[in-house]
Length: 118
Image (cartoon, rainbow, N blue to C red; front, side):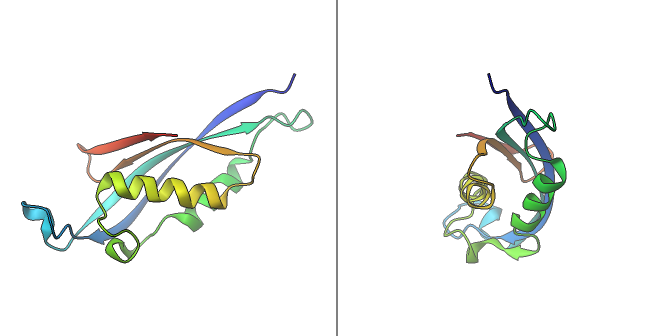
């Protein structure tokens, strides 16, 4: 019987956005240090005793997150929710086919964030 692991990696990146249709101050250009948590499901290799190597997982995350980006160029209305969904798509494309995104949390501040379960 093969074992399954859910591996977790935290990440952060700096990026700016604006929400033109928003009635509050977020309609103006501003930036955040976004913080996130990615959960990936992998089969555990019997020989190594691990799923996706953390070094590889961290590299994938570092190469995927839109650090120092203007998010409106990537997502039409870059709310925290829409950005989390966008990151799910990016991570799915970047991960090996044998691994799956299970969950992503994305925080635009210390007090506000979203969780997307896939």
